[in-house]
Amino acid sequence: MKHLICALLLSVCSVFMAGAVELPDENLNYIVLYKWGLINKDAASAVLSLRSDGDHYYAKMSARTLPWADKVFKVRDTLESTMSKFECQALMYNKRTHEGGRYENDKVVYERDGDKVTGYVTRLRSKNDGPVSKSDTVLHATGPTVDMLSVFYYLRQLDFPNMKVGQSVRLNVFSGANVEELTIVYQGKRTITSNKKKWRTCYLTFNFTRDGKPVSDDMSAWISDDANRIPIKLEGKLPLGKVQALYQGASSPE
Image (tube, rainbow, N blue to C red; front, top):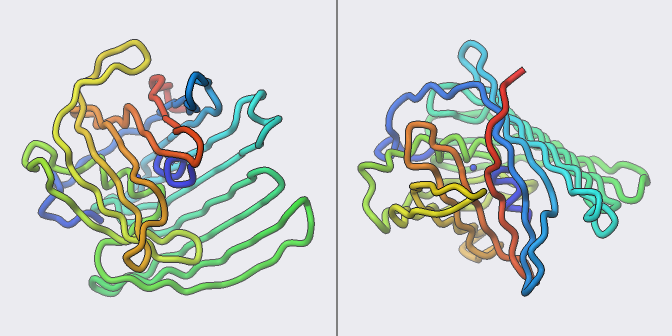
């Protein structure tokens, strides 16, 4: 669930990049659907927004459970990422989550020296409105490195027309106090129906590992096979059932 929301909640090596792509200001709206056996119910809503200013992009993802789901497990998550327009390199990341009775806030400031990346992380934690604990962590990685929001803008710039089925890219993800490795595999073209509309998409799978060990089940994503590269559908497994994020349409930026 964590990785699915954060993916709406996704630097690929330049050989896979389509080149500099100017991304538009946008608000993309999603419904998060919970499926288990005969249960097929809307559980949350999410908005993925992007704004451009000078040499930077500012991305934001806001997710919240619907009223019925609040009674079971209330979620209010906000992710923000500041990126350079050059290859959407992450500069700053801020993740605020209210899940059940827990509050968490992770802030990351990136520093790059060639292909070496350092993340200066400040983490705040609180439970049931109790005292707030603070910790600082420094993360290190070599090679393309993103966070759980900027990764999606790298993803939207992949050069799908020139990729072969089974081709993969690997990158580092700074996630909390850890460095995870994300492997994205291109699975080819798929036509899917979502929100009563047929879409021609590029189908991708995601695998998260830490020290070579899986940290979650694989995720799947279907990206529109057009100039907009909109994430149409994302899917991930839960201990019971699975969760899907389905594109509902775009709204005008303010």
